[in-house]
Image (cartoon, rainbow, N blue to C red; front, side, top):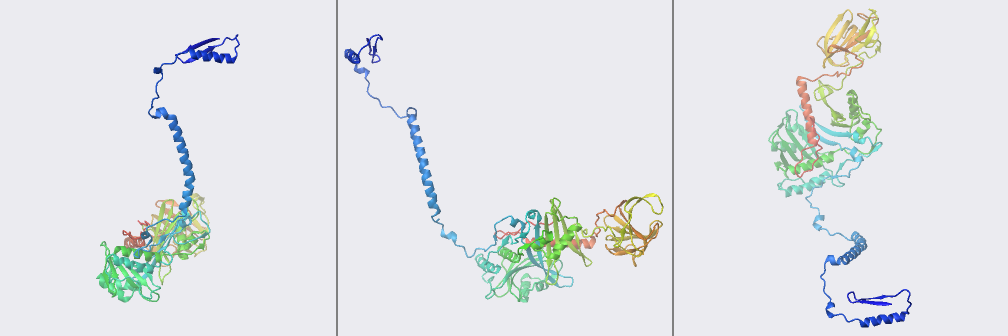
Length: 587
């Protein structure tokens, strides 16, 4: 056994020979003896402990461990306390400034907008407005105009029962008269003279706010128009004095806000007058019944808005049969007006059926009075982004519908001007029954007994009443639009018919005969557009008249009047006043 010691590394090495067996106690003794022989280490080798400065580099493991423990503990704490905080918050009252909960007595009770839904998109509130219009006899009539929109594009997905509650409604209990009373407080606070009274008189429980427009199309007396509006005579006289005029001229606009009671004349609350392009003037009735200017446009706009809402049509829920007529009736159109819309659509090739070519929207305006039935004044069909507008206009006492260019849109050339006729030879090549040669037949033949009445296929002017070898006796009518119709093989023309005479569609012009190249009594009906013969059974030509001269000027006035009615229903909003504008513009 060999012992080796080393002071450099302070270690003792014991090497035991593999072939030598020593007891362990002898080995321990030998080691102890070796240590005893070693000299003690010098003190310079033993150094004192030194303080080491903290840094992340030297203590990074400890820092990482400490940060991990902190994050885990914080997360656990948040999970535990978060649920408790939410639970406590739900049951705790929220403190609010009491001033924000008190409604000022001067605040306007405005109509609320009901929550929108799919069904709401298919509803349109029908706006109403009353307009006093002068008649040719010097009197005036109060007409109620109503605007109705039927949006079929958005309605195609809905069938059956339609709830036609209006999209705008006044809150329960907030009658228009109550709103008038409340606005009186606003008026006084805004500087309106205190002697101008808008308050509801005692006992006027059933009074309602109402708006009437006086928009003359010719020189009209103010008193006559107010009489048609059933305004109290004293109010009419006092307002005339305030306006300083007894007559209104085209371009003038006088709007009256009335308080109406059952079986009593209406009293004017406020009035707004505009002369031409001048600014509006507002007048209010004082306690002594006279009218004074107060120029409160905002107040007038609010009252007008309330009157419009109270007058708006609010139809009840109905069950439709799917037809456009039933839908129009459901949104407020009278049956007669709905029937007229259907007829005009048919006459103008407007499809009311579902499909890509069907009409998307119908926009109409009608009017009625106490003494007259509802009249369709204007209708617009919109399909695939294109619109067709028709206006009602009377010519020589007969009402018709014209497009914006003044062309009648209710009459199209008749395919069969012989009511009791039977179609024989058609348009095209044939063997002539008299000449026995192949010739082109430039018209169509209708068989009928001699003397059967023949009518004008469209409005026009008699161009020829003559006789010819082939035609026999014939009549030719020139129509607006550059085409003419010929009626041949006649027994004779109608009594009194003359060249240059204006005839209407359906008017009797001649009688069936068998003159000229004919094998029996029949009518030869020919259509020529420009220099070309056209099959009259396939032609779709406007057969109404086109307005010219004074008639066209009068029609233009009608269009302007319709535009003014729409503008009156959708006035330009005044700052702070309710906005009822639907961007309904006419061109």
